[in-house]
Image 1 (spheres, rainbow, N blue to C red):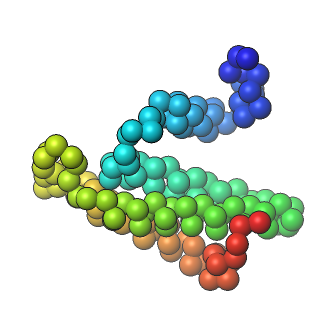
Image 2: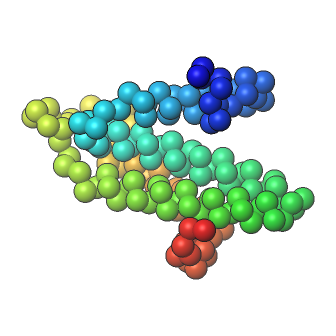
Image 3: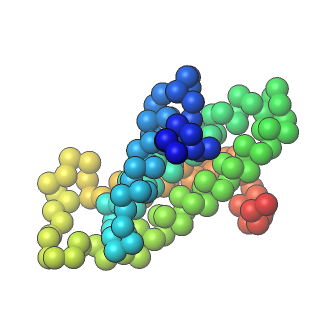
Length: 146
């Protein structure tokens, strides 16, 4: 079976090539990740960045879809809430991992132009939480996935 025959493959005529490239990158990462590779803070930071970017994109799509197609808009709003839950869980996992990588390599946040990684993920998470608070109720977030 060729990669184009898979049911999860996007058509090459897709009008959104950057999304297609991001999806291909995630597929490649998933295939190459071994079971022995533990999650580390940089990995979770990158994953959180991806999830929050998807969260923003889905929010914009839902805003444009809701007026014309209310039923689709409700489903997109549910997906929006679930993506927030995923981002929140990844953020929590990030803070539960040790701050330094195994092997004794020290982190020097003062050398990073964007500041310490822990602040970068927290700032991104805080920005996403503002959107969630504006558009999602606590009951929506607590509802079980259907």
